[in-house]
Every structure is written in structure tokens, then in C-alpha cells.
Image (cartoon, rainbow, N blue to C red; front, side):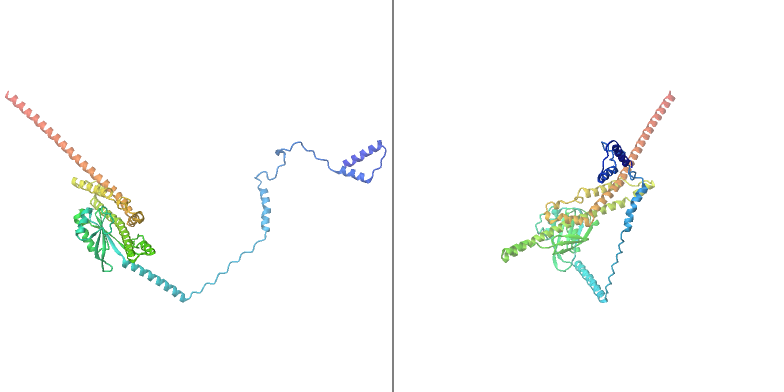
Length: 454
């Protein structure tokens, strides 16, 4: 209204001073339209700073009511979404009918499988032979033992293994305990005072250990004979040997590579037979080397059993010492007894850690053998099967305890010896004092006599 009035007032003033004009309707309307348009806003030269901008409603995060109002439309949208119909559960398949005939067939199969398994086990047990180790002495003179076996007529080192200083191998003709036929058994003699017999009757192996080879034994202990035995099987389908539980499985598969090469080259029958004999001898040598590896591990366990027995006897003889010490009573042991027990303990410790290969991870026997034969693996398998490593550790711990008992005995011996020396010194001093008193008494008697005579 102000703008319209101002327009008309301007036009009236102008019309009052100037001559009167006539305007068309289009000019009037254009003028009114321009008057009715809003006045333009004033703009600053520079943009407004952030502090002068209007504050938003969500400026502060503590506006809980506003957040709830903003979340409500989303929830409404979720509620307005069409709900899906629930899935139908799959119908359970009808259970198959089990007939009595099917049950009978399954039972018969399981019964047949069990019978076959038992038959296989019985066949393996019937074919199992025995390997037995004897520890009869502290050491063996292997040269003397080889001469004794050669004088008995046995074949020494028939496959030229060239392991003489470490082991002596002899083939012993004997009756097979399974087939009741005469065959050949193996005897291995080790310098540690142990022999190992493969597939030999117990009477024959016992006679060889305790009578025939006794002249070659150093410090024999026939009264404390230690034995250990395992069973072994020969499997012609395997190249490598192994041990399962208490059973050794020897792989006796003959290397027939030379035979196949000879046949492919078109050699004659005689040449093929010669090649087959060579490959068969190589296969027997590998089997003998595997037997030596297993025998070395078994001999190690038997020698360790001897030391365990000696230490057990030592503990039995000194069992009463801790009880006497706990009661505070006097130890009635002589000097010879204490020295004897100390020597026994030192001997057992030396045999375990110094004078034998019991604590060695790999004996000298296997250093010159072929690596592809895996003889050290057979040696380790026997050690794990018979817990040799654990037994050696336990034996050393027991000897540490026995060493404490021996130290107590030595302290008692030194204390007793010192006490004797002290009493001897006291007796000598007493005798010297008595002689001095006697001398003084004699001098007094002489003075009294001289005084009376005067």
C-alpha cells in the first residue's frame, strides 16, 4: 500500500506542475506490477562468519528427545513393511523299514569280519618268533668270544658286515621252534657284556650265554642275570622294518631291481640267476643290519636293567639310614661298610655315564652304516618302545638321592674319626699330666729324705 500510494502521489505532483497526460492501460499495469515487487535484500560484501549462522536443533548431542523423534519414523517404516510369512518346516521323511533279513545279514558280516580279524591275529601269533637278550657280564672280550664261537664250529660274520669291534655276528644252526625244522638262527655279541639271540631255542641261547661264552666275560654276574625278550615277524611285502608294541616286524622284501634289468636286457638264464643271487644276498645283508640295529637297542635296555637292579640293591642295604637319622639314634656302621657303599655307588654311576654307550644318542656302530638303510631309526624305535630315555633320567635322579646318603655316611665317618683323634689327644694329655705329677711327687720324696738325713 505504501508503494502504491507513493506512486500515485508522485504522479499527482507531476500532474499538478506539468501538463496533463493520458496513459494507456498497459502502462498502468506495468507500473503497478513494478511497484508491487519486493525490494531487493541488502547483501554484505563478505560472507557471514560461522558464529552468525543460525544454530541447528541437533547441535547438542544431549538432546535425547530429538533423537527419539528422529528414530521414530524409521521404526514406523519398519513396522509398516509387510511381514513375511513364516517358512514351513520340511516334512520328515518316512523312516525306512528295517527287515529282519537285513539285520541278520549285517550281523553275519560283522561276525565274519571279527572271525577274519581273529584269524589274522592267530596267524601272526603262530608265525611270531622270539628275540632274547642276556646281560651276563660287565664287559665282553669280543676277540676271545669270536675265537670261542669259531672253535665251536659256528660261521662268523657270514655276510661280511665288517662290524667286528662293535659286534660279533654268528649263525647258529638250530631247530625252528615254529616249524620244527632245522634252520639257522642269529647270535650277536656286544662289548657291553650282552648277547642277543634271534630265533634260537631258549636252552641253547641260555647255554651259550652262561657256559660257552663265560671265559670271554669280564666281571661276570651270573647270579644277577638280566634278560629281556621281544617277538618278531618277517613280512616279505615290506622293504622297511618297524616295531609295534612288543613286536618287531622285519621287512624281508628282496630287492629285485637287478633281476628286472637283466630280464629287460635279454640276458641268459644263468646270468639272471647269478644276478638274482646277488640281489638276494643284498636283501639278506639289509635284514641282518636291521637285526643288528634292533639288537643294539635291546642290549642297551638289558644293560640298563642290570644297573637298575644294582641301584635297587644299594637302596635296600641303606634303607634304614634315613629312619635312624630321623630318630636321632647312632649309626652303627663301620668304616669298611661306608667305604664299600660309596664304591658301589661310584661304580654304578661310572657304568651308566662313563664306561658304556647307554647315554649316547647314537652308538659308534651306526656312524659307518649307510644312511638310506635307516638303522639309527630302528635303534631309536626300540629305545622309545622300552622307555630307555625315561629310565636313564630316572636312574640318574635316584643316584643323586643315593649320593646324598653316601655323603651323610662319609660325614659320619669323618666325625667318628675326628672323635677318636680327640679322645686319643685327651688320653695323651692325661698320661703326660700323670707322669708330671709322678715326677713332682718323686722330687718331693727325695727332698724330704735329704732333709731328714741332715
